[in-house]
Image (cartoon, rainbow over all chains, first blue to last red; front, side, top):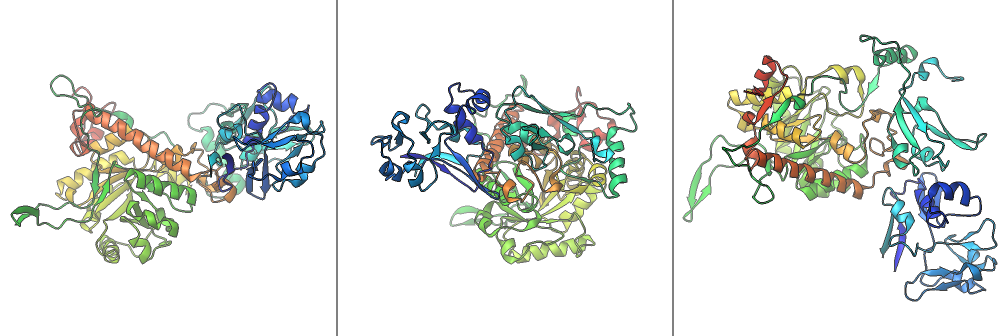
Length: 146
Length: 472
């Protein structure tokens, strides 16, 4: 399956991928409104630019072949879509037990800042290329089959 | 500004931030290597310090909401056509620091740009123009010494060439990437230039910083430079490449005469077993034509002439702005001198320094160049905005820097593609211009000054160029 891959050699740590993710998952689809208003109501980017000195890398859900998060999920909110291979998240079903969050070896699952729910990458189902990949100014993010 | 030396308040640029659009996402802060933008914890917003801005436009280019515009500081000194702000500010700087003013890139002063005073011909009525999209058009160029005459012999009933040809560099386009050392620019761009040159079938020049072992594989598309410092020069280095280049910016302490230069040229030829042509690069200076003649007689296969618009990573500003002559004049004078002396065929002439577009290339070739080097144009292609602060080593575009966090801003893949695109685009335009003049090969244009006319030049300049005024 196609996944988002980061090349840390050319990730410049600008965090435009986070802004793109935020906008894509906002109500308004408008960066300024999303950042100023919706973020205050709990909107979060699904990806995180990890930093260690000058080495940076944008990380998101790996949509693992055998996801630990799904094994850990007690409510059936996380499932593996057989066709696309994506780890799909149903917010309605999530009970906020944080089991997946602890099970994920990549730290790719976040807590919603207000709701007792998790937040994770959905690979932008409405876009052919995920928002983070489109926004990267240095092609450090690619969406490809490896 | 509080605590700031008075003179630093006469800064060149101001950051204009539209607070309606700014979301305080701090992308500008992360991009600015000069620390102009910063997070103000008291105000809980991004602020900026105009005095630190060098005008590179990186923040403006990456701002996701388009909230930033970099402007010239509108603050003005009283008008004075003699004491322009440039001079006043420089005196302030030196009075503060007592040092040599530093500059970078080429000479930015308003000296005449002769490319803009020369115009090309186009076929009308009596001679047909050529459509390069329908008919063959030859841009291929060979650099190196050409024989005085050719001798043939018959072998197995077929004619074959008896004359032994000197080594040649084959270029698919009459354009090469200038000598920009590994050091002045970083590895990412060196690999991008090497790959682009390979893909295009042209060459790039290593500059004086040696050659990374990973780049030896691009040897067929490489010119290795032997500069005065001899940085990174050894046998494998010399043999890695398609050509070698003896440059003389600062003194080579083994060259004090044309005879010494001849020794170096032949030392390089010996070291490379006469497989590759040797190019000698000189700056366009007052006696360039006589010097070039000596260089050709000393055995150089290529003479590269670098004009004062040619970029540098760091130079004393006074030298950058006041030394040398326009490359256009030097080129015309050199080509003419070599022709007059009957030795033009012994070496190719390459012009560098300030080539901005394909029309400059065409005019250079019509003035007698075999090919051009592009350096600044190549850097602009990968993002350079000519802020002229290369000497700080903090290039926010990741070009003139080896700081790892900045160098990674040049993705070699993207940079390679941009260089390839630029040269291909120029090549198309050169073909169109050639076709318009009724020519179907770059060879027919070389030194063909009849295809040029000048506007606004005096008689002496016309004489040096060997070009008629427009209307004649």
